Image (cartoon, rainbow, N blue to C red):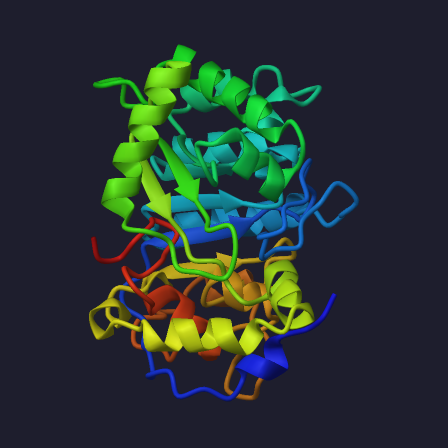
Length: 321
């Protein structure tokens, strides 16, 4: 895989400081039952990295010490970590809102037959990757047969009440562009998704989040190999909206890798840009149990333009609709 950090380190992106921490985003490991082209984590079936019991305990201690409102679980496929359910149950017992970033097809994997039911029982918000409502586009980006498996996962969730009015079970879908371009307007695309999926498949959901593809890991390597990296960065820089800078997710979110090391965001994690102490030593979640992050500087590089281009992009979709 071709690296991109050296192409991103020199930047004129504006300095950022943290506000109050509200969300802890935890990567439970890089194992995934899929291997998507746009994946900025480089996850796949052959990855073995997985968060263990000691680090799970660190996460729970952090939830106890800090006023965290939301625990955002990512991967890989977070459900494939054997401790996934334990962490969810413990977070919900602390009245912390839990998000599961689900690829949908994992719900059809052997051993995952009751995962959707578990999510519903614990009132976990599901944020599900669905890069298009057209079968050919999904299968081109994620692999043959993935669209049908995704529909199967969505039907499981709908049958449990996810995406239904007044159920309290949130089901949000995620769109990624097929290549090096910005996502279309989120509000109109959401309407298109809802119409097509309901009319053709009887599937309902709450919101659609549009995410910009980041020029890192697998997607960044593809851009470099095709000679499209500089052009894509020119697009992101040229589309930067000043209003989006104040709303970027890293200001109120802390990212944790499978070993418990901390980062300003998931993208910095994948670029190996950790939060460090005054001497440059990377910090672990345990180091921050009693530490106030508000006002701290955020590590930036040119990939930050991906979060501020156009409507903006965050784990919660467009910043400015």
